[in-house]
Amino acid sequence: MNPLRPAILAAAGSSRLRRAVTRVPVSAGVARRFVAGETRAELVAAVRNLLGYGRMVSVDFLGENTTERAMADNAVTEYLALIDDLALLAPTRGDRSADPVRPVEVSVKLSALGQALGAAGPAIATANLRTLCLRAAEAGVWITVDAEDHTTTDATLAAVYELHREFPWLAVAVQTYLRRAETECRELGARGIRIRLCKGAYREPEDVAYHRHAEVDSSYLRCLDVLMRGAGYPMVATHDPEMIAAAQRMAVDNACGPGDFEFQMLYGIRTAEQRRLVETGHAVRVYVPYGSQWYSYLMRRLAERPANLGFFLRALAER
Ligand code: FDA
Image 1 (spheres, helix red, strand yellow):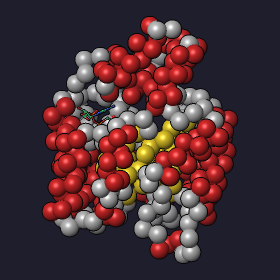
Image 2 (cartoon, helix red, strand yellow; image 1 turned 60 degrees about the horizontal axis):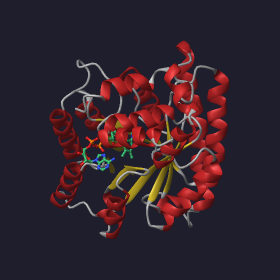
Image 3 (cartoon, protein in one colour; image 1 turned 60 degrees about the vertical axis):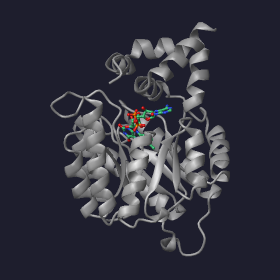
């Protein structure tokens, strides 16, 4: 593991550091490598570009740890407008149910929809997610629910199980650093729920999460095996060449064609590899974040890779 990872992830939760970093204009410049922009207009331009190069998108309006009802309401309003804008960029043709995969999707954090607003929080977030699902169903846009820290996993899965009955295309992310990941994959997969498989980006205690790289990777491979053998639609969210190669091998072994699973990567990361996968006939979706609340997202990207941190520190030094 990157030895600085715990410290950077701790910094992600510091409001003092958040204020200091976001006040420095160059930080916003660095964030632009990983974030499509602060406004929906900037986001739309980035999405148009990605769709033009054959990549699909999942768009995240940045914001998490909502502490007031008004913030959750604001997130819902923005997501509704976002869904409408995305629908215009990739209109579905004819009978939507015939489309195996939608090119435009949104990613949603339930914490942004109010999950942490006290005892009523999970119900508020689920109701807000349902509002988004109703609009998304009309617009022909799909939704994936992001996975956040482990204290939210049960509430998030409960919301997905509840709404999946009404919206069968609703997907959820599973983090393979969690010791429970393989069980989650089996349970979600058995219900035919679309699963985005990622390694996990939060600071978690060792009793719930693997800390060693090798253990997280081996959990990823076990989960991928479950998903590739199952009837669902695996979404292989990783930049790791070993995981990508393993997914390609398992796809061949299980006779999965390019339309039976997709690769997913984050905006601004391994762009050449995204293009290469598209050119070799794979479905590739890019997770595209936008909005002014980019601090925590940027910190998680810096924690993942020392080279990203170097890039950030060099940019600060060159001011
Ligand atoms: P990892 O970080 O272990 O790196 C393995 C190898 O991949 C590296 O050795 C290198 O070869 C290559 N690599 C990685 N990053 C690179 C880079 N920047 N440039 C070049 N090579 C690089 N997390 C979460 O907790 N909840 C969620 O909902 C999501 N959602 C999500 C969606 C999508 C589409 C993606 C791609 C990722 C997420 N994540 C996430 C983040 C995820 O959990 C994880 O933190 C990052 O993807 C980093 O893990 P990797 O699998 O990429 O490999």
